[in-house]
Image (cartoon, rainbow, N blue to C red):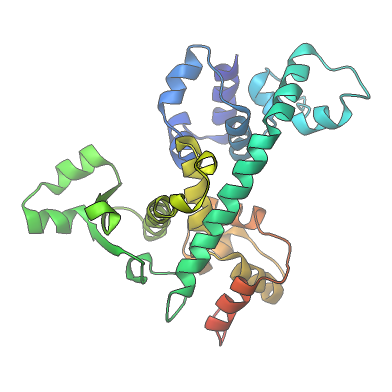
Length: 295
């Protein structure tokens, strides 16, 4: 049963299921559905497997201690050369059937998010890292404040706001012309920077949804992954991180996290998702704005 395998994988990684789903931008209501026998889509399975450092098969089947599950990709590659059990065959067929949707969404998610983040960075007259998300020049009015300061100005209870609304609250006014982002003042600086960047991504990407075909607009579940891609590129642009690699000769999550002021998990994923070094006009322009290079 998927739910049991999922719990075992979470325990191995010392992470709570609710925390993991929140990090991925997935509804925590999925946990109840999975507990009652449901299973996630292939796309969500792949997300969970990446975060839990295991194969998709390991999330679908119990794996005896001391053995290694065969990755779904291996089954897909070799299914014509060896016999696969019924469950593996079913999984392979689902991967094949879902590939057109996956390709469309993967391209949309990565490219649209990166393009939007680069466009925002290029609007700035001065760039430096760690980036101050609250002081960037935005295409619409963005107001950032803590629950405490908002409460002092309006007479509302900061404690109640935090308890009911969570660590970050985003509200849009006048059709999105003005946006208010409130955050828990107790958040660590790098965590607050990451969360605010994700919220900015949600706002800006929703504003440009009219520029893509309706069938290509990400579903609610995909929005979380797209917001992660946006925050990743905004706070640690690929072109800048690749330049760091050229100068440092080695990238570690700790050094990337310290340099760009992002959480360690985000720094690790930034390294994993770096593209191959290639000519990129937007990236070249970003690097020219940083001259002399400050890192």
